[in-house]
Length: 494
Image 1 (cartoon, one colour):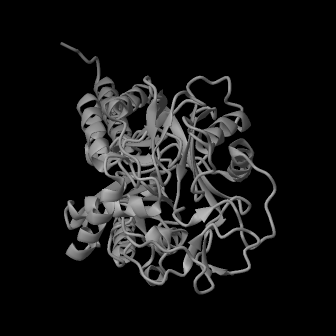
Image 2 (cartoon, one colour):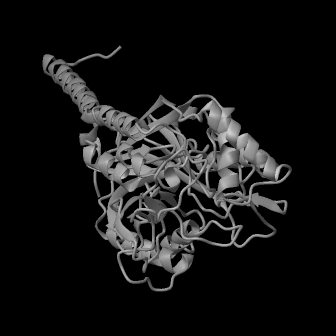
Image 3 (cartoon, one colour):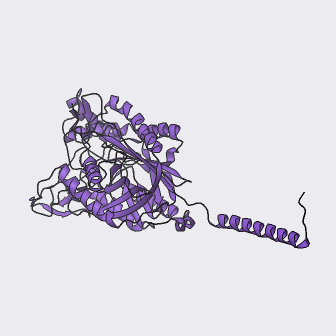
């Protein structure tokens, strides 16, 4: 028991106790007012998805091709991001188009292994036309062995990305490259545009790739989007960790099997960022809204010679230049929304199916070899499918950056309209995401006809589909823009 020699000693002891308790209370109050600093966690991994068996079926053209070797390797480039509350995954896959059922299978596998919810995963195709076919389209079938292998490989990529999560910073910017994107669809003089007896159109006036010197071309039908949105991730001490770029170039072209220019952009970004000696660094390049775009500008007399590498160098240089002014954040809130949208299909009539079946007798027992044969077969195949499709749409917000994902081949004008209407300051669009539901020309362009309106499994939605999809995505972006806004002030820039 403590004994006190005087009243003064007791008084001093009590004062000391009170001061100590006040100090503890002040410390506790300060801790409550200043919560622990928030920190983003980011992991990235590029998993090889190259075919192991040859030959393989290749789609992307009017008729089926096969390939017997690799020109360059294919990858699924995977990101996993977490703000401590929400965790999402993004995968950019070197393929022409991956159907929803395959991606849903990959998401299920990845979710079981990581705990990330399937509706918090965005998976898109680059749209290389030089990869194994996992989706029957036009004259091409599916390479079944490759189709069986792919879901597990994509899932493994997500798993590995999650394992590699470390504290990281995030920033974004928008570059511009006006040299490698232009409208490939042109209104032609009467009678100059190709027609298709089984395409479901009449009096077509639009031609794809009319050529530089074609005197019968009148005007392009669309406006290019030259923007290159960039999302950059670094370590907390500023070293490159990962980067995602996005551009509205349909593809360049490469012999199969190849990831086309998309992989070359990744390689060039790695070099420009000085990350060649950083084995954990990963770059990914996604397709924006390029359904009516290519790199030949037919308003000009000609274009300088190009290949996939020369184009990639220009796109990467423009993206890298824009990164000079990126403001990085240790933490931003992640918000994601997923919605399903049912859209009707332009089904062929019974008479059209009868005529198509009769015509198909002329090439019975073999694959189609030309446009009429391809679309006669498409007419019959489409007639056996459901009269509507369920589309999976997603919207993501990373701080003041928005991402809209679309499961279609989307016109540039649609992407521009979504960006303009988005309440999120910087917005990017990723097409062929979470499925491949075909071309969606704006409704006003349907009467003009042309390749992307010809009815097929890859171009079958009703004319109002584009407007429905665009409106729903803007609604979703508006929704996520209003969520967790009180947390934006917590984000600290460096």
